[in-house]
Length: 537
Image (cartoon, rainbow, N blue to C red; front, side):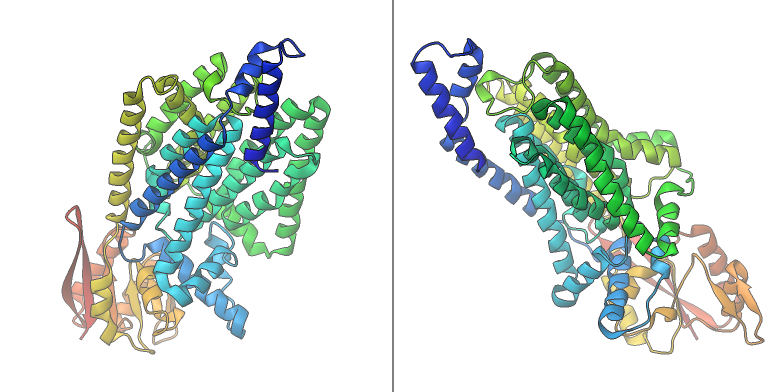
């Protein structure tokens, strides 16, 4: 039965009983709320507003443009290699499982399949589609947890955040994982009205798939599981809540356990290297805190206000439809709102613990998915009954919009436009050449049909056997390779491996075998990156 038909039935019942006299249970307030529940016209009006939000989100994401980001190029290139393995028995490149933050056989292969037909734009369009789906699911679950107004505000807040706009036009794992987390949360929220008590177990394979796509989703499993337990406790009682509290995590854990047993040992190595035992970085706590505050601080602040307002006063009578948590369930409301809000600080806290800024601008979007509904409650309450203070809601949304658009544009301007470099290198790429690249994955992706994987050498790690058969590693390997004129072209940016690139530059300058060519690539008016190119004489 659809939401509209259920609400219509309850409203009709409430109005008929109210018109016939005092309600049978003596609760005038309860029937007043039901009589004031949104009708079909307001439901369709809200759906129209949601459609406008989704259109605006899509337009704002599509206006961002740049050539392939390093992570995009890496995932798509790995996906193409694994896709060739699955379709034509080409060699399987197991090394990707050792340092990928998710299974290289899931999203990378699927994205590579889209890329084969529609190119990078198609892979990015898929990310936009799932991010729009996540916003729609956020509206549905917020409407059930709270009310229509809070759901609309939550959708608007989430849709204009930096991470949402960025991930909507970026071919990486993250958009798919956010959609899967939103889908799993909607399933457990939707199960509150289901006549089948075990309906929420359908969320188990979705959660397991989210973790398999990207291991960072592990942090958010407790959030979804706790929401499920609270909902069952409110609707089914303590006994069933304990049962669900055990069955859902047991089902999710079992799927993940058997999947890990079926996978190779390299997956365990990749899980530890990228997630559970990740190496410590060098970023300062102050910098990480400031980044987190800029990218999600306003939403979290609104969510904290929402926790107080929702816990103390519940929802406004004029905008209640069928709230899951009644006004008498104060403790449940407190735990629910705190759980949703605390999800927004999980990724920042973990990356502060690791002292790393890597992917923080993407990971913070996972938590905003959960905090946005409570922030929507705050904006709805502070706007007032029947939009008494519309200036507040408009000001908040405009502020979030301006911040989100500018921050997303800055993210897309943070890596160099490689189109000029691709054009410059195109006549020089040969099947038997060797190319040293500091940021190799974008060029490797664009020339995947023109060169073999072993022809591309990174400045991160290199093993080289010289003409005498002696094996060299790290800095010695680059020195020996330059001495032997092994590299046809060297491209340096002095960004990811600045110290090593400077050492390589000194070796190239002292060698008479290479000459330099300066190639400047400008993207927009905000930032300029310079490629230092060396060509063998």
